[in-house]
Length: 425
Image (cartoon, rainbow, N blue to C red):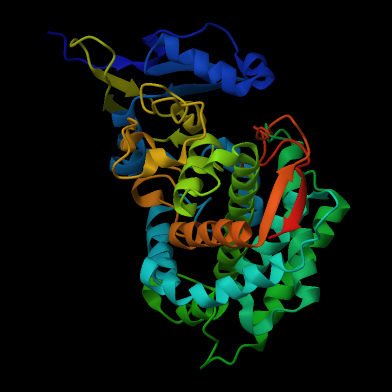
C-alpha cells in the first residue's frame, strides 16, 4: 500500500485560471466542484486554492493544526480596519492571550446576565417599526442590532450622535471592502471612508480617555480597558480600539443578516410560523450562513487524511503558499449531510426529528480555536429578536422572489432590498 502523501496539486480538478468562472456564479461553481472529489485544487487568479468538502480535513485545518495556517488574502483589506482584532489576527500567541480575556464576558453565563437589557433594546426598537405601508426590513433590523452591540460595548457613553458615528463607519467599511474583493488596491480609500474611520476612532478614543483608570466601567470597553494593565492579556490602547471595531463589525452585520433572512423565511413559509425561535435561527444559519465561505492560508506544509474513495494514499499534502477554501453554504445544502437540504424545515433541529442531519457538517460560527467568541451573544440576540417580532407583528414580504446573499460581501448579506409590510397583532 502506498502511504506517501499525494500533493493536492495532483488531485482531480479543473485546469486553468478559474477566477472568472467562480466570480460569475460562486455557489453553483463551488457546488459543481464537488463532482471532482472531497478536496479539489483550483487556481483563483494566481492563488493556488484547495476547495475542501471533507469534514475531517476541515477539522484538521480549523482545529488541529493552527501552526500550519495563517491569514488569507481575503482578510488583508479587513486587517486595515480591524488591526490586531481577533478575526484578522493570526499571531497565535497574541491572539490566544486576547481571546482568553475577551471570551470571559461573552461566555454563556455572562451573556445570560445581559438578557434583560438586550430584550429592552429589542422591544424599544420594534415599537418604532411602522405598520401598514411597505418598508425596508434590512434598515430596520440594522438599527436594532447596532443598538444592541453598541450598548454592549459602550453602554456608559452611548448617545444618538455616537450611534450615527458607528453606523456611518460600518456602512463605509462594508462599501470599501466590497468595492475591491480581490484586494487589488488596498490603499485606495475614498474620502468618505477616511472621514468615517476618523470619526469612529475619535469616538472610541474619547470614550477611553474619559474612563477613570481605577474604574473603567462594566461594559466591554471598560473590561477591555481594564485588561490593559494585565500582562498576560497583551492589550494596549490600540488593541482595545481594534477589538472594539472587530466586535462592532462581527456582532452587528452577521446578526442583522440572520434576523432578516429568518423573517423573510417565516413570511414565505407560514406553515412554520409557530416553530421554536431557536430552530428558526439554526435553520436560517444553515440556508443563509453569514460566513458562507471560509479561507485559510497554508503557511507550513500540512499533510491531512482525506477520504478520497480509495484506501490508497489517503494522505494529502497541502503545501505552504496554498490557500484552503471551505464552502459552508454548499456543505449546508448537501443532501449527504442534510435531508431535504433546499427546504426551510426548522423542525429538523428538534432532538426527535426524523430528518437526517450531520451535525459535524454544521459550523456557522466556525469550529476549533477560531470559534466565534460572540456565538452565545449572537444566538441569544437573534432568537429573542425573532420571538419578540412574531409576538408583536404579522407580516408579508412584498417581493415574490426570495433573496440570496451577496457572495463577495464581507458577510452573506441580502442581495436586494427586503420589502416588508407589518401589522400589529
